Amino acid sequence: MSSKLEKVKITAYKTAKFDERKDKIKSGVFEVLVNPEGYTRSYKIKYKDQQASGTKAKQLEFDKVEPEDIDLEFLFDKTGALPGTFKATDSAGIAGEIKDGVWPDIEQFKKVVYDYKGEIHQPAYLIIQWGELIFKCVLREMTINFKLFHADGTPIRATVKAKFTSTVENELRVRSQKDKSPDITHSRIVKAGDTLPMLCYEVYEEPAYYIQVAKANNLASFRNLQVGTHVFFPPLEK
Image (cartoon, rainbow, N blue to C red; front, side, top):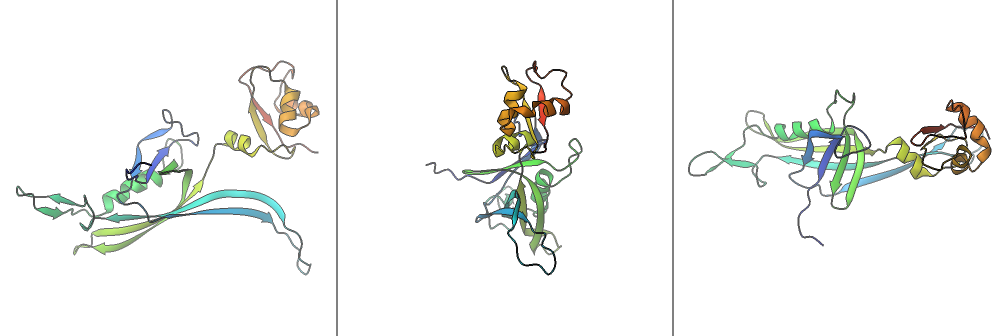
């Protein structure tokens, strides 16, 4: 086990593919000065609850597993209580306060996790890393609480409470679910040797759906699938 102190690091990406070469945003990394005391992970299952007024209780019907949330609280401090929050101001090396307070650090945090990115028309996709934690997500909400101030009102200590919601690329989500119901949407990339009936069997456990799938994809021939073709498997009536 390594004795090196690992700091929480948040990295911003353009897409949910999280490709290090293509998607990583320039200057889109934030590393905390002080690690949080901990974090909270929340898991939720949603059920359909459409009970008519005046009727007896009924069995709940499963709807979906909702994305996981993680809650973190970050400390921003320029009071001098933490290493690196003072700087030398004279030839004797006497430490002086950093006059701009916590705003520069908070602005960098907001730039990475919150600010709208014009090139992708939304805030960034994020990876939070801390030791064994690797959480792919987007920011859901954040609250900044300013606690201490210079005499001129400049904030020198603040906490940020942030909620992040997990996210995954659609194709990866479909593969990870491994659902085989005809009423769920699927997609596949054609590989060498694939046939439409075989893919229908993998998706629906019923090869006979190949006619409906061919029509949905406007395929001229279901017998000769081109390698690399993206095939959409729509919800079908059972």
